[in-house]
Amino acid sequence: MQKVYSDAKSALAGLLKDGMTIMCGGFGLCGIPEALIEAMRDSGVKNLTVVSNNAGVDGIGLGQLLETRQIKKMISSYVGENKTFAQQFLSGELELEFNPQGTLAERIRAGGAGIPAFFTKTGVGTLIAEGKEIRSFDGEDYVMERGLVADISLVHAWKGDTEGNLVYRKTARNFNPMMATAGKVTIAEVEHLVEPGQLEPDAIITPGVFVKRIVHLKNAKKHIEQRTTRKRDAA
Amino acid sequence: MAWTRDQMAARAAKELRDGFYVNLGIGIPTLVSNYIPKGMNVSLQSENGMLGMGPFPYEGEEDADLINAGKQTITELPTTSYFSSADSFAMIRGGHIDLSILGAMQVAENGDLANWMIPGKMVKGMGGAMDLVAGVKKVVVVMDHVAKAKDGAIEKKLLRKCTLPLTGTRVVDMVITDLAVFTIDKAGSGGMKLIELAPEVTLDQVRANTEAHFEAALGKAA
Image (cartoon, rainbow over all chains, first blue to last red; front, side, top):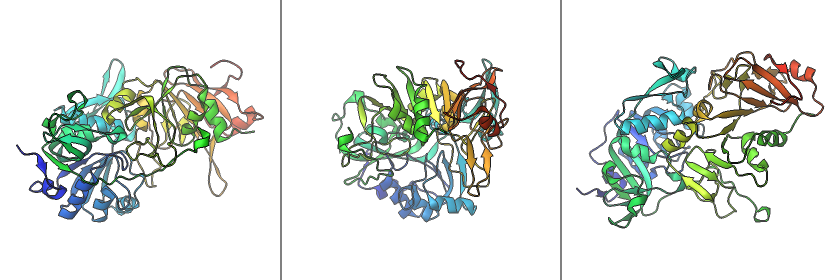
């Protein structure tokens, strides 16, 4: 099966439907599948439920899908950096489901592994646990959280081969590996596309079985939200 | 004299131990990394997927793929490892991180913590805070003793019971404010104890600014 597509638009072709659930990798603007998000925007698909730790910033990443009002609901842990988001949420246009970050990561990991639910201590006794089953194990209370899957997962990787094996770079890994496992169709954009045999098998983080389509980004855009530095003489 | 932000961070750094794996929150907790005693081996965990966090990069050496949980550019160390968010929270939720230092809006005398949501205001989300307080072995809160509104009104933050939505129940072990240091017996019935005062701060001053019931245990080891 040919997994390599020539660009982000063709990688999405035939998959998009209004009302579908999309997972988007990334933490802040680090490791986001930006080219695939832009192709989603250009497709005009709407009423999306988007699972992503954050919601981009104004004009970048998921911020672009918010501006065009293509997102109906976000499932996230922190959305503080986006004015468009705040406006649409406060006006009632946008639904929001907050998940603790570890619960979100684990829900996606579980979903991808075929685990429909699990119990965790995180959130017990808080608003997050309201309406959810609580069970005691070994004298401590735990809340039940559901596994999470998506119609499409969009991920960003540093290197990939034509089989879909993926390698990530530094903290751009974040939510991408779990999301790659939890999409019915996972599409990866990669900064470097190589032939099979050119990735070290021991170093592969996402095995190709999880990835259905791959796009090579010739010039990946990257953004820094908080540029913090130190002076050389302070070393 | 009340402690400054840096003095509060320096006090929090006294809770570090050699070999600890530590997660620092945003704000004053981040400053704690400036006060790690020389020769002490402490590994900083960043919940976006990094253990062994280095200092900010030199100008011109910033890497968009290398950030901390506050989205700031950082550097790696020879000990650094990278991992997914699921592995990162397995460390946190599985009890493998020794110490979490974070900010708070309110803390109750039983160790309840509120630090993510004010009803009626735009909520940004809890990020990893609920996971950290539920899973990390020791939780230290660093915060101003009271909140001062623009009109000068003072709101107490150390309470009998939190009024804001909780981040976790019975999770806080220690509170360091600009006025004092308290311990909390979160698992038992020992309650809250005042163990230190900032220089020239009096017990009466602390009592006047604290709603929570506490036992003055100054000079006794926590």
